Structures are given as structure tokens and as C-alpha cells.
Length: 176
Image 1: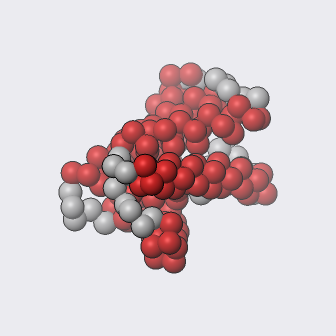
Image 2 (image 1 turned 90 degrees about the vertical axis):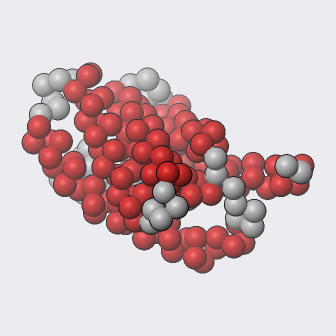
Image 3 (image 1 turned 30 degrees about the vertical axis):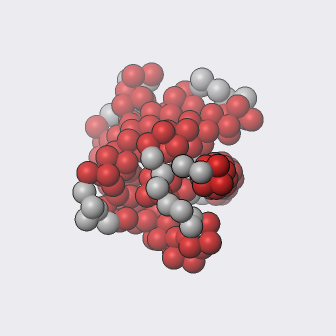
């Protein structure tokens, strides 16, 4: 790989990380506007993780996920807290599932990849909750979260597809 293409890939990954962190902060702000379900988030940051899954190798996706979780919690002073662990477990399981889905079948649609990621994200968070606060992680909550997965997965897939359609050629001239 040439130095220029390496620089392009690093720049593209850095842009996705910055957008993912910014989207995560926006997601938190929106969550506070509708406090009916204070633990439920749209998952705006996952739009950029999905794009990374489609465009980059696993190592770059893993670095993006680590940054997406670490940076906001470090800035807010909640590193290694319960919300950090929930975010980390959901994000890691989601990204791994999306990456495996995307790489094992050439026919995997962006919607299928996103739905897989959304379901695994919620399951990962529930498992972390079960580990750290067993009394809070009941089966009803898992059912509710899993039921919300198609909604968040569809929104993530739609937004990622629209972004890739509009600016994908400009930003990702040399996809992996």
C-alpha cells in the first residue's frame, strides 16, 4: 500500500471517529429531551461504525469502536463506570457481529448488517447489565431492547446508505 493510500485511509478513519463521537454526544442530548426511556438511545454513532464495517478491515473498525466509547467517557469523566461498560460491551459485540456478517457473505445488505448490529448491541448491553447489576437486567428488558432493534437498525442503515450515496465517492475513493 502506498504512503498516499495509507494517509487517505487514516484520514478517512479519523473522520469517521470524529463524526461518531460527535453523533454520540448528539444522541445523548436527544436522549435527555425525551426522558421516558432514559437508557434508550437512537444509536447515531453507529451510523459511522456501520460505514467503517463496510469500508475498512477489522483492525480499523476495532480502533474506531474503541475511540467511539473511550473518548466521550474520558471527556465526561465516566471512564470505567457502569455506563462505560454498557457502551463498551454493546459496541464491541455489535461491531464484531456487523463485521462478521458483512465479511462472510457478499450478499449481505446494509440493512441486514445494521439489524444484526442493533440486536447484538442491545444484547451486549443487557449482558453487561446482568453482570454488573443483576437485579436490573430482567427478561422483559431484554425483550424490550430486542424489540427496539429493528427500529434503530433501520434508522442506522438508512442514514448510512444515504451518507454513502451522497458523499461516499468523495470520502472513500479507495475502499478496502
